[in-house]
Length: 494
Image 1 (cartoon, rainbow, N blue to C red):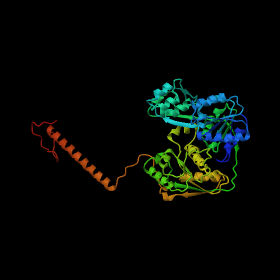
Image 2: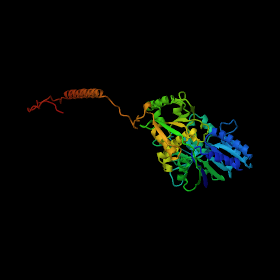
Image 3: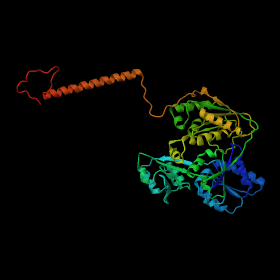
Image 4: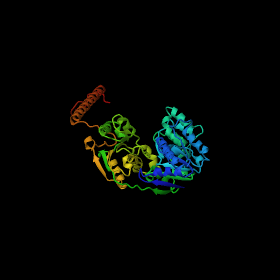
């Protein structure tokens, strides 16, 4: 099958191209985007275009934030039948709905996707007790020639709503959602009895691919970084040669370059949520927050959940999601801050093995792409903006990634600004592993002396006990050489 990729910088008009096509060319379209707030934004865009063109387009948004009866997936499936005879209609849904819903009813429609879906998931399950429960709910069908097996939910498997009401099962909701979706889940056991082994976790992964859209008449994705995304990398690894691409690159012409400064707080370490949680990392994050609270005119900011919770009441500017792909509502702002980490985790081990990737692929597809998208949501995305634009990131590695992106795409030169006054510029994270207990010299000498005294006392007590036992047995011999005279008659030797 063939997929059209509309590529270009954020703000180059990729989404506008899709919107213009849907509004002006009669047909039945399924249009997917990253978040529910974007659906409402795209509805307004389409209605404006339709009123101008007079094309009679029927616009049908479906998402979870609406006050409508029935589950989202069922409403999406029903819409395919309701509007099957319409000459010009578009159904708008989220990426999550696109990748987890049975879309067989949309056979022959045109699918349009705004930004690359977050299509790959994986994790580790330690279930030596729950394995019996998995055995009751899911069958396993081995993938020929591999150690992997596809998870097939039985008819008795509960609905998603039941998982959400169960205090113990709620943690497995993500697994179950994937398992009951058309994409499905793959695990590295071929029978659930193997999951009783407490020495190893069960590894699972799930990957949606554009290949799953082969029943649509045409498939088009508008995305800046599609070819470095996990979606593309996984597709090429798992279905080599089954998807071909036609790329349409949109050029962006800037009238004047903006003046961009990228500020960073450290060059001594990389940030992560586990490091920021407590101890040394918590103190580093606190210092960053205190500095950002003093930045005048900060436009918008974000970070991991931990960062947002700690900074929420202190920072000026708009608090937004770290994932802003597709957003146009911030283009009037001239500064931003993103204290963010999204690197490879232990749970990514199945992805690395199955798709032949390494941690740098994951870090680029997640952290680097998110940082670039975030930075480009402000005024810098306007081709005619030539004023000052300030960016705040955590470390020099992220700062250099932003600089390289802006320079490579001929947006502007970048000034990197180290914030040494914050006090964490050369802070080094402790190495992984058990931390050695360090004692000062005096304390160590005292403890060694006390140990020698205890050892000597223990040995004296043991020798005294041996002497008493020998005296009672009549075998004790005093110090010195033994006498050469024969023993007295009647002496007893043992």
